[in-house]
Amino acid sequence: MTFRATVLTLFPEMFPGPLGISLAGRALADGIWSLEARDIRASATDRHRSVDDTPAGGGPGMVIRADVLAAAIDAASPADDPRPRLLMSPRGLPLTQERVADLAAGPGVVIVAGRFEGIDQRVIEARRLEEVSIGDYVLSGGEIAAMALLDACIRLLPGVMGNAQSGASESFSGGLLEYPHYTRPQVFEGRAIPDVLTSGDHGKIAAWRRAESERLTAERRPDLLRKR
Image 1 (cartoon, rainbow, N blue to C red):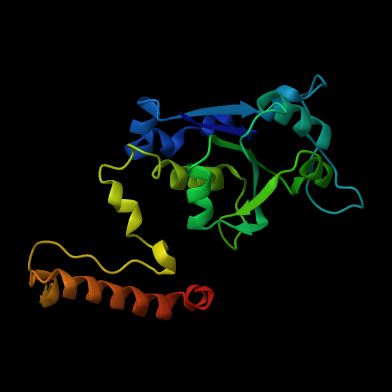
Image 2 (image 1 turned 180 degrees about the vertical axis):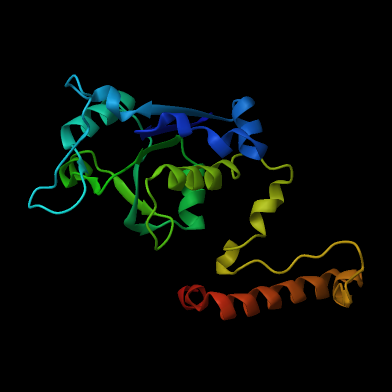
């Protein structure tokens, strides 16, 4: 089954962008996943193709209208569409590897890439949009965040990564950050590959990698250890 991605955006020309090259691009060409970028303005009803208006209650910026966005969502995702509807938003729940794996195992996603100050709350509620954040910072729009989410999902689809085990031993697998990697040359600027990695003792190698993952996680992401 092909993983179907639909992105609702004011800038459909931004896609596929980086999703059209490397692993994601090859998978797109091979039909492992599909991408449809739809212009929200196509659902506007006035001659100026207006999609936004001033915020109720005053304040800076503009807000995407509920009626226009609802029409765009309905045109892209009918009521019987099994795909989750996501809204890329800095106030959303943080995107995790666990959530990515759940999405990758499903039929695909419908993603709303917002702009301006945001979108009308009523369409979030009426169309049951799941707000998703990729970090505690604000972007100019949701397109780059949508690409990040899609890239994370696509690489987990069967047949995308050359080695199916690659996704099982990387950062956040088992709630830990990934251990350090080394390759040739044996010595680089006076720094040698740790002896254990060239020992041939797979048990010691596994123990070293586990210990390094725990060390890095404790130093950089103690919150992950608390969750475990």
